[in-house]
Length: 350
Image 1: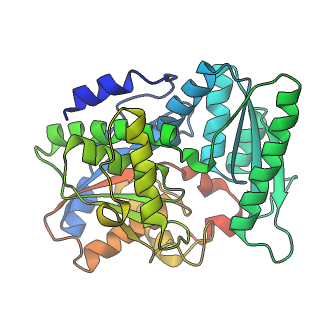
Image 2: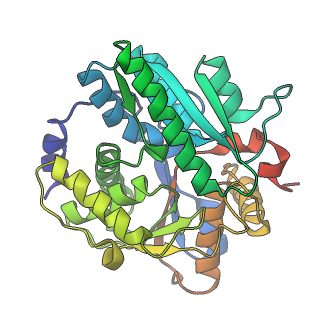
C-alpha cells in the first residue's frame, strides 16, 4: 500500500491536530565519519506541542481525538513520576480543554521542596497528580497495576457524578495510540527516500511499553518495507513481549480495516542488553553515549530512554552487527527533560 493510501485510511479516525509534522530528518555528519556508517536521525523530540515535546504526541493525537469524539471531560494516565508520556498528556489536555489526572509511581522519591523535570512541568500545567509510593517489598510492575486500579476507582466516582472519563494507558500503548506510529513510519520512509534515495538498512529506537514499536511494525508491514527495526529495551520484559507488541500492531491495523499482518515473534528484533540495572537507573554505557552525541553533534539524549537506545546502536556498530557503510536511522523519541531530573536518574555525565 502507498503512504498516500494509508493517510486516506487514517483520515477516518478521530484526530486532534497537535504536533508539528513532519519532524526533522537529517544526517549526523561528524558521527558518520567517526563510526563508519551513514547515521541519520529522525527528530521526534521536536514533535511538540511545547518545548519539551516527544514522540508520544503522535499517539496522543489519536487518543485525545478519540476522547473528544466521545465527549469526555477528564483524561487519566499513568507512568513514573518523571514520565515523558504523562507530561505530554497534560500538555495536550490543556490545549484541548480536557482535565488531566495522573497516577505516577515513585520509583525515585520526588523532593517536594525541589521539584524537577517533567514532574515540575506537570505541576506548572496544573495537572491533578497522585503519587503512588512503592510498598515494602513491592515490585515496579505491581505498583503500576495498583496505580491503574486506584485510577479506575477514581474514574468510577467521577462518572457516577456525570463526568465522562477517558483512560490512556501507560505510554499511550493502545491500538488507537499505536496508529500514530503507522503514520510516523510512513513519514520517516518518505523522508528517507528523499534524503538517502533508498530504504535504510536499519532503524533503531528505544522501546518501553511497546506502543511505538507496535506502530512501527504495523506501518512497515502495511507499506511493504523490509528494513529491520531494532528495538532497544529500557526496562526488563518477558519473552512474551514481542508477541504482545505484534498483537497490538494488528489491533491498530484493524482500526484501519486491515487484517493481521504482523507476527511479533517473527517480525520484531529486540535487545535486552542495554537497560540494566533497571528502568530509570543510569548505566555507564548510556552516559558515554550521551556525552558522545552531545560533544560530536551538539545533540542531547536522555539517561532513561534514548541514551540507552543510542548506546545499543553504538555497540551494534562496534561489534559488527551493523555493517560498515550501512544507512542507519536513529529515531529520537524525546525525553531529554530527564537531564534535569533527580541525580539518581541522571547518573554521572561529567
